[in-house]
Length: 249
Length: 249
DNA sequence: GAAAAAGTTGCAGCTTTTTGCATGAATAAG
DNA sequence: CTTATTCATGCAAAAAGCTGCAACTTTTTC
Image (cartoon, rainbow over all chains, first blue to last red):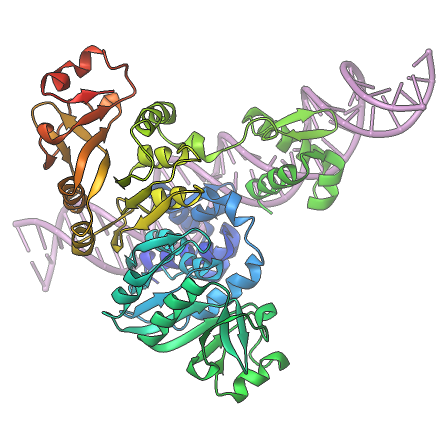
């Protein structure tokens, strides 16, 4: 295993768990603790991690600790994000909507992956900015104070000029009959535009959002190719969606 | 559990409850009270908590905001931002560039003011979002990892469709002879476009940036209407700029 | 393509840090 | 004033870190 390969692995581990122990990594990667220590020191010098006695901590976790701690259901969201990452492939063009789950996705992106991300979300864009090898395109427009994303005709018309391989939607409500729904008209417009211009639609949802409906429709369940929750795919609650032909991860 | 992790946990506990007891933490974290005591003493030395007999108290009770401490020369930047705010008027359309000084400006914006801000800067936009009565328009485009702003043709062409009353530029280098200069080509393109579409140009600069020159030219000193530093307007160092007809605040 | 240089890795020996415990002093509470 | 905590200190064991070194691999140079 190459040194750089190993360091990427370490970075990835840190992004997922927010910390690593020298002893764990030593076993997991099959090298001595000294080597791990040296790696961590190098990464710390490059300001990519924070070295502490016994291991290292994630930098993004630390710099924004105050917010991170406040993220609701963070653990579940990290699980969801981890599953979603498996769908990403080298060179893809990906639409990413707003929401904390998507920001979490941006945070745990494998360092090696180089893809192009289009997003109207400020926080997702900022998180993606820290990723070394990906391109980030921010969709500009009037900023919705409420949602923290750009909205309006400009976003929609900008989206109409691209075609994405994948569209990753954070969802507030999803139901096997009613499809994906939301409560903010402007957000709905943006999501609709994203859906219309992507080959594959992936919905991320906490299990508590399942089988709930809100006022405004984003899309039919038939348009959703893949549903990701923190539940194991064979959970009962996911059955109605499978029956509608949605792939469940 | 890592030491730093444990201290993080203690800090969070303190922020929630405003106080902690050594005995509680000892049980909750599964370490001896001595260890907790040592942690609390360390945190107290770093001025993060207030140590008292039997435990510790929250410090943020009295003083809030941690992240501000991390901004370089924050005090000077706040002074600059405070002066710049006086130029803003009701209903104005304002271009704002990136940089921490401009973010500081966004932070101290008078709550009553309702203006429209166009910015390519992610952090400025996020800060402006918290302002109750202003409109924020984010200029979208490829995101420059380096500068944290949108760059590229789209930003420029978008700017060409508006005309602003005011353009507030954070500057890295300004010189009475060479004008405003910068080191990042893409940032320069965006700034140029902003300057070309605004009636009044305001440059914000720390005094240490005065009389310095970098490789790429943003604009001539003649194009700058107003220069704001943290210095009093009659400071000697500002004389060369006054002579060139720049208003100095 | 061989020799030299540079980089990588594990190990032994030693230093530093961390942690829990024992002891006695300091402090708060009744 | 008495009593029960709480605190500071020193100490020892364990864990983690650092350093130099030797073995090995990769890259560069001639």
